[in-house]
Picture 1 (spheres, helix red, strand yellow):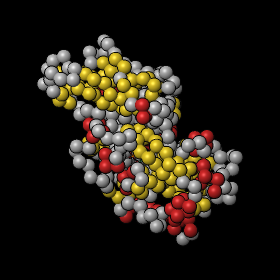
Picture 2: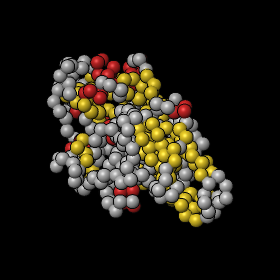
Picture 3: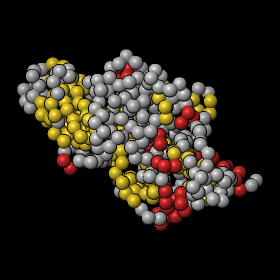
Picture 4: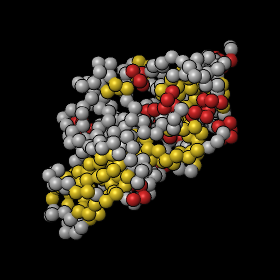
Length: 381
Ligand SMILES: Nc1nc2c(c(=O)[nH]1)N[C@H]1C(S)=C(S)[C@@H](COP(=O)(O)O)O[C@H]1N2
Ligand SMILES: [Mo]
């Protein structure tokens, strides 16, 4: 057996030896389980600070969380975009100690699944899409600490010829419709890879939790969640374009108004959520302070408006000045319910590019990038 085969066998056995659907507890007050995924409940953010605590951060697993041993873990870079490590069997390797010895950076970044809000394509627009039926809770903000991907790529012998960087997860192969698509992996254009991407080993001040990619994951700010590969092991750096099902079959915009072969999805869209239970109970006869958050992959939020009369009139919400320029924006608005009964709350945000949430999101075959105004039901009395 040559060294390449040994490495393959080693990582395969490592991934197979121990996996769990989701490692952390899923208290129903914090998270809603959706198969191998878990959605944050928005009421669990009421009264919280800027970041989402680790216990309620959403989990999106194509398969299962692998229990990766930190001491034997290696980052393995290879490919035609590197000097002297063209083949997967003979990679440039770094262990956790190597990464920790490189200059560390900390960044506050938002992670959002491309399918966040997918269920509203069905419930509000009669246009259901396949996939995890997320409400608005497949999003979270955390403080990530790690080393820049660009730093590691340069240590690995990056050449000017590199065009794509493809990190690969150590979780089990993804099998769908009877077809084994291999490990979760998605090419990242070299421009983004060298810009602000982090190889993170800490989340909110502690080592990454198992479900969020221990020991090391990518964090790709502003881009859809699938870009931020968890439990990263091999990383291919290529002088020619790379392809995987995650940039050809999934995470492309297909359907009317989109190119026949779809459009590669990069940044997330603008959204807003109330920090309230779905169908919240609100006491009658008093003013209530409604809280929420808005965010956009285009950059900071400039304005948020709310409506409690089915979108007839809109009122500016008060933006928390502490969040100005941040990756999401907290806001509040005072509401005096006119009387008992069922009411619908709406919030719409405008981001730094002037993009405002539309009444209807543009449908697409796989239900990505829902940006429509969500009708949040509440019961007063
Ligand atoms: N290896 C691996 N990385 C992955 C995934 C996965 O299933 N396996 N899911 C991706 C998707 S679709 C999303 S939205 C984010 C979710 O990150 P989280 O589970 O830490 O919230 O991880 C991404 N990275
Ligand atoms: Mo995702």
